[in-house]
Image (cartoon, rainbow, N blue to C red; front, side, top):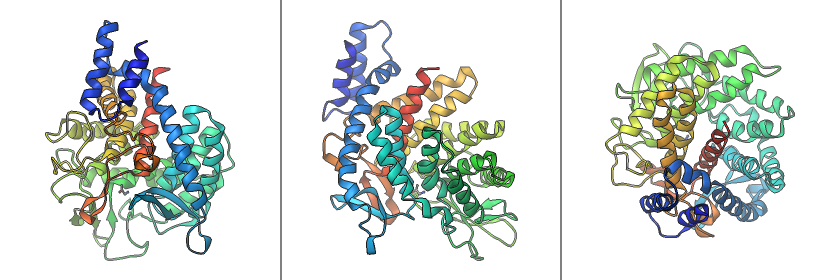
Length: 417
Ligand code: GLY
């Protein structure tokens, strides 16, 4: 009985996240001796997935007619909103795999064949990206799309495209530095730019090293990149720099750039979340204890930061209190923390899991989870793309939705264990 009341709480419009949590707690206090945010989120999950599925059916009805609406009929995919309209981008954009990926995750969440059919169409559109050597974002682009297709359809028919993608990504690796170049041309000599987001590409390489027809060097590249990043890319307190520029002459860091962050002295929130996620994933893939310890240091920096709001959704930079929140940073971090909670020793589990549950409860509240056609049917409001570039401020972002859905699924799957 209390389930319906909690779903009603989470769906109620104009309720703040804190009020939603209090409301959830109230419902339990009346009818349960052990009210818990975890139980409330568990009971709300079917309603959250049903609402997300309805949103994405409407979103896909708007996006599908635009699928080949680029210049000269070029393929394009939905990224977010711009000027009140759906923002469609060319398929070499870094977020091209997240839309297809969200459709796969909704197929996983609901079993609805509609999502399988649409996810397949949007995924296969991205195949030409396997040859790209102009970007490091190939993990996002291809593993969120083809990787989920492979996993959920239990098929190897996409393995060739994924292996070709891993080989393309590896062309950006510099063996002398031990790093994959993030930004810039593959043969640029003056700058060698690396960002923590790059950690997210390593999952593709780890898969490719194990796959039939894959190569061991993909694992060696992933480990080297993670190790050098761990050594250089973070301050003593566990906060991340955004952009490091390495010298290709002697391997030292020749420049620190603020990139999408507020300054060189603060931590850009999404970069911090990418790093927590990336080192947690690398521990899962390699079982290297250093990665697990480091992921905890990075997570503790974020969770304990004086500027972390009580509801768990960070401001867009840890040095920008009172400015816009970034829902995507919260969603990525929640997904990472749920995995981290399952990897740390038992006595530390609740620390990371409870924080992730708090973040998901906030994101599922009306403050963040769009109602109806508001927000063009994207799920999450209040994402920040790149504030210093005055780009995408307080807006939906397709990758925010992707990691929100992934975190909800990780939470649901953990209940079965
Ligand atoms: N990888 C780019 C971003 O997170 O904005």
